[in-house]
Length: 181
Image (cartoon, rainbow, N blue to C red; front, side, top):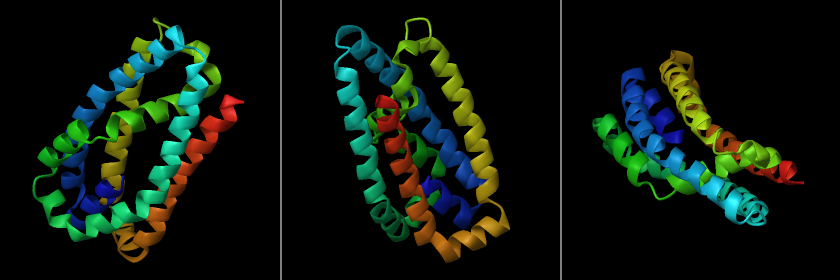
Protein backbone atom coordinates (compact mmCIF):
# COMPACT_ATOMS: atom_id res chain seq x y z
CA UNK A 1 0.00 0.00 0.00
CA UNK A 2 2.80 2.37 0.85
CA UNK A 3 4.55 1.58 -2.43
CA UNK A 4 1.36 2.30 -4.37
CA UNK A 5 0.91 5.61 -2.56
CA UNK A 6 4.51 6.50 -3.21
CA UNK A 7 4.40 5.61 -6.91
CA UNK A 8 0.93 7.04 -7.51
CA UNK A 9 1.53 10.36 -5.82
CA UNK A 10 4.92 10.74 -7.44
CA UNK A 11 4.27 9.41 -10.95
CA UNK A 12 0.50 9.24 -11.36
CA UNK A 13 -2.38 6.81 -11.72
CA UNK A 14 -1.05 4.87 -14.68
CA UNK A 15 2.19 3.95 -12.94
CA UNK A 16 0.30 2.99 -9.76
CA UNK A 17 -2.14 0.87 -11.79
CA UNK A 18 0.75 -0.88 -13.54
CA UNK A 19 2.36 -1.71 -10.21
CA UNK A 20 -0.95 -3.02 -8.86
CA UNK A 21 -1.60 -5.11 -11.97
CA UNK A 22 1.81 -6.70 -11.65
CA UNK A 23 1.33 -7.29 -7.94
CA UNK A 24 -2.02 -8.96 -8.62
CA UNK A 25 -0.16 -11.81 -10.32
CA UNK A 26 1.59 -12.62 -7.07
CA UNK A 27 -1.60 -12.38 -5.06
CA UNK A 28 -3.39 -14.71 -7.45
CA UNK A 29 -0.67 -17.27 -6.78
CA UNK A 30 -0.46 -16.87 -3.01
CA UNK A 31 -4.20 -16.69 -2.24
CA UNK A 32 -5.03 -20.28 -3.31
CA UNK A 33 -1.97 -21.58 -1.48
CA UNK A 34 -3.03 -19.78 1.71
CA UNK A 35 -6.60 -21.08 1.49
CA UNK A 36 -5.41 -24.62 0.82
CA UNK A 37 -3.07 -24.37 3.80
CA UNK A 38 -5.87 -23.10 6.04
CA UNK A 39 -8.22 -25.83 4.87
CA UNK A 40 -5.55 -28.48 5.40
CA UNK A 41 -4.82 -27.24 8.92
CA UNK A 42 -8.53 -27.15 9.73
CA UNK A 43 -9.08 -30.71 8.52
CA UNK A 44 -5.98 -32.41 9.88
CA UNK A 45 -5.16 -30.40 12.96
CA UNK A 46 -8.17 -28.33 14.11
CA UNK A 47 -6.44 -27.41 17.37
CA UNK A 48 -3.68 -25.70 15.37
CA UNK A 49 -6.04 -23.08 13.91
CA UNK A 50 -6.16 -20.98 17.12
CA UNK A 51 -2.34 -21.06 17.28
CA UNK A 52 -2.18 -20.07 13.62
CA UNK A 53 -4.59 -17.21 14.33
CA UNK A 54 -2.40 -15.93 17.17
CA UNK A 55 0.75 -16.32 15.04
CA UNK A 56 -0.92 -14.44 12.18
CA UNK A 57 -2.03 -11.67 14.53
CA UNK A 58 1.49 -11.32 15.95
CA UNK A 59 2.90 -11.19 12.43
CA UNK A 60 0.49 -8.39 11.53
CA UNK A 61 1.57 -6.49 14.65
CA UNK A 62 5.20 -6.97 13.56
CA UNK A 63 4.37 -5.57 10.11
CA UNK A 64 2.60 -2.62 11.73
CA UNK A 65 5.67 -1.88 13.80
CA UNK A 66 7.88 -2.15 10.69
CA UNK A 67 5.70 0.08 8.46
CA UNK A 68 7.59 3.30 9.22
CA UNK A 69 10.90 1.64 8.25
CA UNK A 70 9.34 0.43 5.00
CA UNK A 71 8.24 3.96 4.17
CA UNK A 72 11.78 5.24 4.77
CA UNK A 73 13.14 2.59 2.40
CA UNK A 74 10.72 3.81 -0.29
CA UNK A 75 12.12 7.31 -0.03
CA UNK A 76 15.64 6.07 -0.70
CA UNK A 77 14.72 4.01 -3.79
CA UNK A 78 11.65 5.62 -5.32
CA UNK A 79 13.10 5.83 -8.83
CA UNK A 80 13.52 2.05 -8.98
CA UNK A 81 9.83 1.51 -8.16
CA UNK A 82 8.57 4.03 -10.67
CA UNK A 83 10.75 3.17 -13.70
CA UNK A 84 9.12 -0.17 -14.48
CA UNK A 85 6.11 -0.44 -12.16
CA UNK A 86 4.46 -3.40 -13.92
CA UNK A 87 7.60 -5.52 -13.74
CA UNK A 88 8.39 -4.31 -10.23
CA UNK A 89 4.85 -5.14 -9.08
CA UNK A 90 4.98 -8.62 -10.61
CA UNK A 91 8.35 -9.44 -9.09
CA UNK A 92 7.33 -7.94 -5.76
CA UNK A 93 4.08 -9.91 -5.70
CA UNK A 94 5.62 -13.23 -6.74
CA UNK A 95 8.84 -13.35 -4.74
CA UNK A 96 8.07 -11.20 -1.72
CA UNK A 97 8.72 -13.57 1.20
CA UNK A 98 5.97 -11.83 3.17
CA UNK A 99 3.25 -12.52 0.58
CA UNK A 100 2.23 -15.95 1.81
CA UNK A 101 2.34 -15.13 5.55
CA UNK A 102 0.43 -11.87 5.03
CA UNK A 103 -2.20 -13.59 2.86
CA UNK A 104 -2.46 -16.39 5.41
CA UNK A 105 -2.75 -13.91 8.29
CA UNK A 106 -5.41 -11.82 6.53
CA UNK A 107 -7.49 -14.85 5.54
CA UNK A 108 -7.12 -16.20 9.08
CA UNK A 109 -8.34 -12.91 10.54
CA UNK A 110 -11.30 -12.82 8.15
CA UNK A 111 -12.51 -16.32 8.99
CA UNK A 112 -11.20 -16.62 12.56
CA UNK A 113 -14.67 -16.58 14.10
CA UNK A 114 -16.16 -18.77 11.40
CA UNK A 115 -13.76 -21.62 10.74
CA UNK A 116 -16.74 -23.79 9.86
CA UNK A 117 -17.14 -21.65 6.72
CA UNK A 118 -13.90 -23.05 5.33
CA UNK A 119 -15.03 -26.20 3.53
CA UNK A 120 -14.02 -27.90 0.32
CA UNK A 121 -17.04 -26.24 -1.31
CA UNK A 122 -16.32 -22.71 -0.06
CA UNK A 123 -12.56 -22.55 -0.70
CA UNK A 124 -13.11 -22.13 -4.47
CA UNK A 125 -15.65 -19.37 -3.75
CA UNK A 126 -13.10 -17.38 -1.72
CA UNK A 127 -10.73 -17.19 -4.68
CA UNK A 128 -12.89 -15.35 -7.25
CA UNK A 129 -14.44 -13.25 -4.48
CA UNK A 130 -10.97 -12.28 -3.28
CA UNK A 131 -9.78 -11.58 -6.83
CA UNK A 132 -12.83 -9.43 -7.60
CA UNK A 133 -12.39 -7.54 -4.34
CA UNK A 134 -8.71 -7.03 -5.06
CA UNK A 135 -9.28 -5.80 -8.63
CA UNK A 136 -11.98 -3.40 -7.44
CA UNK A 137 -9.81 -2.11 -4.60
CA UNK A 138 -6.80 -1.74 -6.92
CA UNK A 139 -8.80 0.26 -9.47
CA UNK A 140 -10.15 2.51 -6.73
CA UNK A 141 -6.72 2.92 -5.16
CA UNK A 142 -5.07 3.78 -8.50
CA UNK A 143 -7.74 6.41 -9.12
CA UNK A 144 -7.47 7.85 -5.61
CA UNK A 145 -3.66 8.17 -5.56
CA UNK A 146 -3.81 10.22 -8.75
CA UNK A 147 -6.04 12.89 -7.23
CA UNK A 148 -4.24 16.18 -6.71
CA UNK A 149 -5.57 16.46 -3.17
CA UNK A 150 -4.15 13.04 -2.30
CA UNK A 151 -0.82 13.87 -3.89
CA UNK A 152 -0.60 17.09 -1.90
CA UNK A 153 -1.73 15.41 1.31
CA UNK A 154 0.75 12.55 0.90
CA UNK A 155 3.65 14.91 0.24
CA UNK A 156 2.85 16.74 3.49
CA UNK A 157 1.67 13.89 5.70
CA UNK A 158 3.55 10.76 4.59
CA UNK A 159 4.75 9.86 8.11
CA UNK A 160 1.19 10.10 9.48
CA UNK A 161 -0.20 8.08 6.59
CA UNK A 162 2.45 5.44 7.27
CA UNK A 163 1.30 5.29 10.87
CA UNK A 164 -2.28 4.89 9.63
CA UNK A 165 -1.21 1.91 7.53
CA UNK A 166 0.46 0.47 10.62
CA UNK A 167 -2.80 0.83 12.53
CA UNK A 168 -4.58 -1.12 9.78
CA UNK A 169 -2.26 -4.02 10.50
CA UNK A 170 -2.90 -3.62 14.22
CA UNK A 171 -6.65 -3.58 13.52
CA UNK A 172 -6.52 -6.83 11.54
CA UNK A 173 -4.50 -8.41 14.34
CA UNK A 174 -6.97 -7.27 17.01
CA UNK A 175 -9.92 -8.45 14.92
CA UNK A 176 -8.50 -11.93 14.51
CA UNK A 177 -7.76 -12.23 18.23
CA UNK A 178 -11.25 -10.98 19.16
CA UNK A 179 -12.89 -13.49 16.85
CA UNK A 180 -10.73 -16.27 18.21
CA UNK A 181 -12.42 -16.05 21.60
